[in-house]
Amino acid sequence: MRRGLVLPFALVLSLALAAGLTELYDGLEAALGQVRLENPAQAVNALNRAQSLLREEGALPPVLRDAALTNLQEARQFLAQKSAVDLEARLLLVRHLVGKALYDAFLQAQGEEKAALGQRLARATGLPPALVTQARSAPPEEARRLLEGRYLQAMAEDLGQALAAQSRPQAYLALARAYARYLIVQDSPQSRLKAQDFVQALALVSSGQPFRPEVQRLLGQVQAWRQDLLHLGTDQAPSPTEASPPPTPAPQPQASPPRPGSVGALLAGGLPEGLEEELSFLALEPEAKARVGEALQALGYGSVLDWLAVADEVRGALALAQLYVESGHFAQARAQLEYAHSRFRLKLLPVAEAYAPGVAKRADLLFQRLQEAVGLRTLDITVLLGELQELEERLLGNTLGPWHALQVQAELLFLGIPRSVFFILAAVLSFFPLYLIRITFGGRNVYWNLLGLGFFFLFLPILAEGLSYMGSILAEYGGLPALGALANLSVAQSLLAYWGWGLSVFLVVALAGAGLRGIAAQFGLLREREPEASRRETTPTLTSETIVEWDEEF
Image (tube, rainbow, N blue to C red; front, side, top):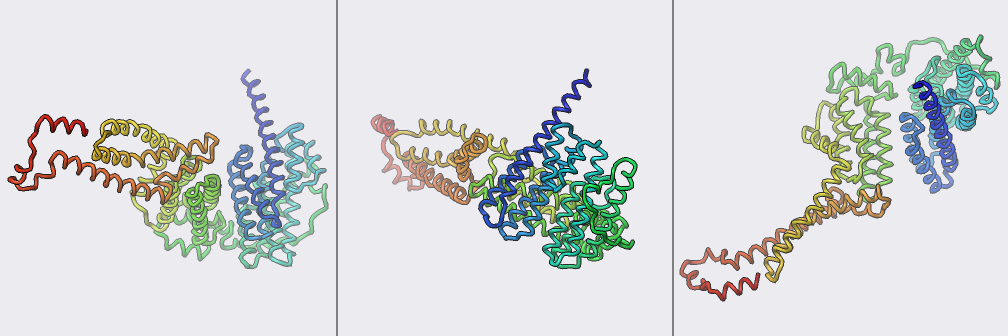
């Protein structure tokens, strides 16, 4: 009976995921189709819609979603720079990252869901519809070989176009297409390549260095991969290349020792000379240096300085988020935080875990908490910036000290709802002592009134802080975004609130001093410094009439 319940549940779950993927791609395709350099305003709105779709939908695995969000954010930057080639390359990668999810779901789906997924897969990755129809009726393993063979053929054609390109932009775009197609079949058992191979080749093209030998090597690996796939499916399935003409033949590269900086060199136990020299200057243990070198190579970094440059890029995104928080634009601030977090996870975290795993995990957790927190303040992002600096300090053998670690732990403990509830509760409870102050110090005596007013300004920052967090909660959870402006009342938010707190403290001192001095003078406490004879002459006789007058004043 349990098995009979599990199978329908798994079927319903797979149908829901398939429906989510198709809806996600339809919305994403419509949004990306409006991204054009000719209309920047429309393109920015379309990119915003695409990012919102990726954040809201749960159909994509987190790794694919983060990578797609990173490429969309980079597309926004290239749109501002009016770089058509870079913009097209990023949009191509976004489509194929979603295409990877469609490809995996297509091989597991059945019936109408498989047909719907196949249509989106063909549109997302440029597959011939006839080939997708043929794969629909084939067994899963045969369909995988059929589609994988077509992707490998397209990759070989793209790499051939990169070799024959007359300009670097053409070569870059052709190589980006090959990389995007590789993302679809990257986990194939017959794969001979890794993503960093394409990343390194793209870096050679964009940096102006000779790139054709590396592209030639990639082409040879793709052709060898295709041959392995053909030999595997000779007795089990028709050739995967029957649906389209064969690619332009290219000479096989001669076997050569691993290049410095390549995957082969890393596996052979060597590092590029320049990188090895940089690592020797780091104040780390030899084992940690080796792990850092391996992590840098796995991410395609040729230098520690390249990794630090990405850290500066993440800091820049956090600085923008801090600026948006200060001005009350919390949606834009969270978008910058998500972009910074995705860059941190993809480009910084693997290296940081190699030499400071505890700090790296803590920084990643702080990123997550900031994105989820209600009542975000500029001081929160300052703490996160300090955590990034702590990672850099650890790389150089230094540290920001225990005070920074204490701030981070306090941030992780109280950030979000706990902090908001604390200040709102303090603001609500402050009304009771204010009521007691009113009934105690109210009346016709001006000095007692001054003292009560001083107590009011003493509690005023608490009231403002509680009101600011109340506005943040109502803005994010109550559907009242206009109340988000109340966050500027917080001392941790803006310079004006800080000066307002300072002014209230000054008023507390002035009013309380004036009131207490007047009360002390009325009770004769300030006349103790006068000569004794003078005091006896001027001290009034306490009579019943005097007592009545004092009672009337109070």
